[in-house]
Image 1 (cartoon, rainbow, N blue to C red):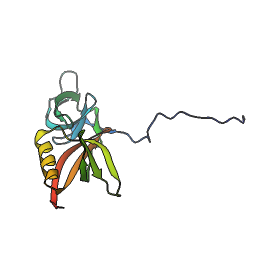
Image 2 (image 1 turned 30 degrees about the vertical axis):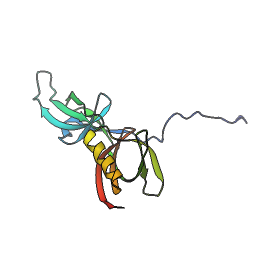
Image 3 (image 1 turned 45 degrees about the vertical axis):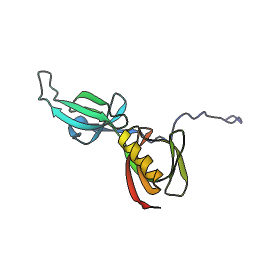
Image 4 (image 1 turned 135 degrees about the vertical axis):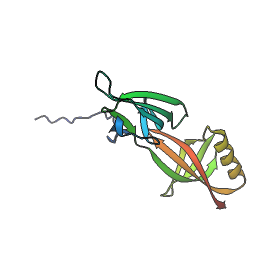
Length: 159
């Protein structure tokens, strides 16, 4: 009806959800769950019987996959919980900068320069020592809910 153009400010992403719903009673040990807005790996699940008010409850003990903090949650087993989409990707390590960032080689030949070195001391020393020794290193990057962190290291031999 009108000749003027409409401009929309887009503040949303592509619509891919960071989590998906799963019934609490079907989440098992070593699975993933979102507790207090953090992606976690389940280390213990216990289920209580139905009580006077009808719902069996699931008690989850989980560890945050990025900072290692222990979190707990109790959810009725028939209710849905958020489960994060967790992806693991392998990249070859190219360089370590002075300020603690790493430069990684992606599959399509580009570089990824926005990742910090891991906070885990043993992994950190393994990466630094291997890099200083001139070895070809492949790091595994875990990503969930918009966060990324180096979680593992593989040595694929000398350069």
